[in-house]
Amino acid sequence: MSDHTVLHVKGRVLVGPEEVRDELWVIDGRVSYDRPAGAADVRTVRGWAVPGLVDAHCHVGLDQHGAVPEDVAEKQALTDREAGTLLIRDAGSPSDTRWIDDREDLPKIIRAGRHIARTRRYIRNYAWEVEPDDLVAYVAQEARRGDGWVKLVGDWIDRDLGDLSACWPRGAVEAAIAEAHRLGARVTAHCFAEDSLRDLVEAGIDCVEHATGLTDDTIPLFAERGVAIVPTLVNIATFPALADGGESRFPRWSAHMRRLHERRYDTVRSAYDAGIPVFVGTDAGGSLAHGLAAAEVGELVTAGIPPVEALAATTWAARRWLGRPGLDEGAPADLVVFDEDPRADVRVLGAPRRVVLNGRVVG
Image (tube, rainbow, N blue to C red; front, side, top):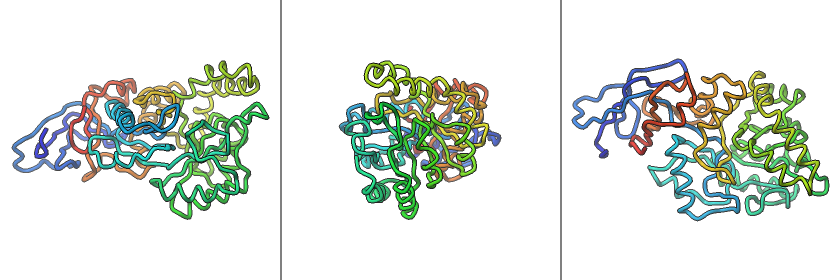
């Protein structure tokens, strides 16, 4: 497909969950709903089109040991692209992946800088590991380095306690979140357990990753404050194996992880029912494979979220939340085409017919 080819997407274009058009045109890499005059070289793609999928918790440039070489990061990004994920919120990475911004053929990335964790309270080689007195300075640093997000590690196993516990005192997170907001960045936090959530939300946090520790006490607080969650259910599925591995050293932690896993679907459904914004994220790039956004949408449906809302959590609603366009007039033509209507059956998302990125058919 040359730079002068006009792409014609014909069939059903899902501009929104209810707004459906019969066709769109891609001219100079951008969406248009006006037929171009005198286009000589036209390629037609038929099917059901949606905005490029969003993975709002995905670590490009990271594996289970830490930062990876550029060629490995490229393969991770390509795997996501082939699965239809064209917009990624990279929720923490020690890698500098700015070079990806110069690649028209790779997904667009919104970075949260590097994770900020308490000393010896996170995965080795992932995060800046600091004490509470230094939290504000590191948040300011990552707010300036990122693309409008900062990532905290809100809780992790305390080896002396033998269980998950909050990493930061209330005053430290209040000051850190205030500083991020002053610099124009939103803040999210890794949280598995229950005890860090109230402090983070009352301190003004914008999002919580995983959020397996939500309870009847904190769900109304999240809903009242409009704090979003990214449940990463495809990652929470690994909790039983993690619990088995830690049983001999940390039996209390292992039992806790199993409880969080057992009620994961009820937790997500209760959050959704309360009006908490829920978005798709996979946590790819640690020990989890890339390209799992469709599987995560399926998990949200299993949890009881209506299929159209689960689809929105990786398309229209997710893009709006992240401040990026969908299939709007003049927007970059990032879209995925399927053989059937994904609103009727989200399993369709696992088999893209065509992937279009920056107006070019790339898969």
